[in-house]
Length: 323
Image (cartoon, rainbow, N blue to C red; front, side, top):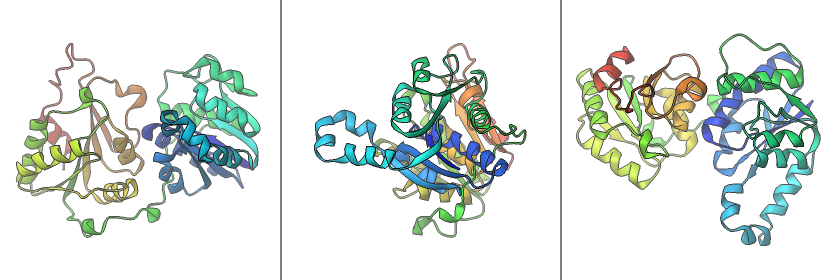
């Protein structure tokens, strides 16, 4: 059975979809998955053992220069790849109008969420099969329910398994032979109001140093690199990683003792790899979109009157790590 999954972004949303593929593969024989995903996240589906083909799309980039995208032939090439196979099922796991449009242009039975379940109700107009999934469930559970309804197998009750083949991950050479007692700090996020104060990272790093731990600090852009350097300069055992590809960050996460992360895609990646992680949520409620899996702890200031993070002092983070 050939299935096309449409789940383009963001990083966390793509990762949240992986367990549904594992469920389906365990319940049914001879499944073959292809996946439409934004080019920046194309590595992630390839890590799952049951994904055959990844079809990258560049909607984010094309919107900035649409004429160039058409003239270069990129758009035509994408639609050729999208339509070159006949699928038994096309599953729009995103529930947006843009993902539904691509679902509608694919060849096969078009399936997705119904009007009351989709994030954008108009998306349901493009599906031949519409499925009801409660919005109050976590995103991972919602996607697992969607796949089980479409493919007609019992919804598993056990914790999700993300199906990532860690043998496909390649570590950066400078990170080989990490110390056993290594923590990873993930401080970068897309919104300033999701950040944890720099002084708190420094204090937490010093607590780790006193306990004999080495800290690795990852970064994704120049602002994050500079913040990483400042934190490391104030923490004797902290080191700033080189610029890492996503697969290299994943390999690092699979080797570390534990991680501390803000609300960001790399926190979801830590959960997918089973790395014990404390995730810090300031303006968002982790109930529906928090890092999901075993050994995941959420500490949140969401219910504080002023999001003051009184719940998120470094001493509490360190005590919660229980290393």
